[in-house]
Length: 306
Ligand code: ATP
Ligand code: MN
Image (cartoon, rainbow, N blue to C red; front, top):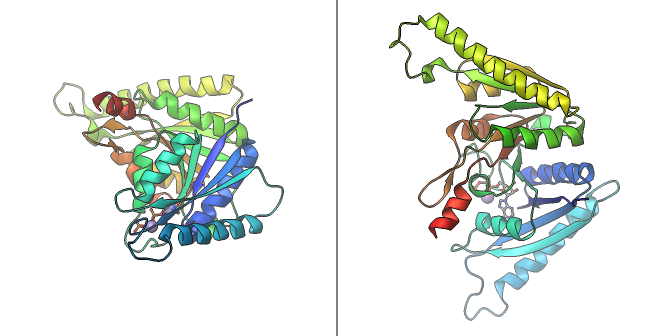
């Protein structure tokens, strides 16, 4: 049987603590190994004339903190691997985390939406943003809030799909989670007329166009849901009118979903993977955990270009 590797990078913030709880939960569910990684952010690895290497001090401190964290975890623990690595301006934390993910063959990365600097300035911390952009594996992000503790059970998963090529991969990841959590899946598609380029040009009145778009989305959602049901997963579907990011967020809030699984729509840029604007907005605004699945082929294209 496959061993799952679950990576939780921590800066010892409250968000990261929450990520560790989710990581632990996942490691138990998936019968996997929990990798805890701290990147000591240093000005440089060594400063000339400084008596001890800065990293030696940071390493010891980081290892002690990781040990204290693990000692505080309750219940039966899965195998846990602790690592402290150095991050420097030329090779920042996100870079180190991504490399570790690749080398350890991580199946998921679990991270806080924020870290030590906290949510004051931004809706998403820069380390998480970069990791989500470039991660080869799905990234599970959690937002620390009053509602986040105690850990909510994941019983209902919302999977927004846009019927692009990556949709199947997103549904596949969602179904693995659904199986392990014993959760149901709701597939949803937002019919956004503002996006329909030919609106007003053809002879069809607007009502007909809306009706056609909704009906054809429903047909495809029904097909996907039937595939999930055939695999033994409780699945239903829903179409909603409106802008995708807003409808996804409000549906997740109103219907109390425990997890959103969404594609990154990774497209290859000149030098990095981009995250689609819808996933980015959902990631920044959702109150529940969000699993971003890399649906791009940007990584391969980057390698080919190198
Ligand atoms: P900023 O972008 O200003 O640093 P922030 O500190 O609020 O904002 P991030 O640094 O992106 O946000 O932190 C988000 C998550 O990234 C943390 O919860 C943690 O999981 C991970 N993380 C951040 N820094 C490190 C680090 N040095 N080592 C390991 N994981 C980290
Ligand atoms: Mn930070």
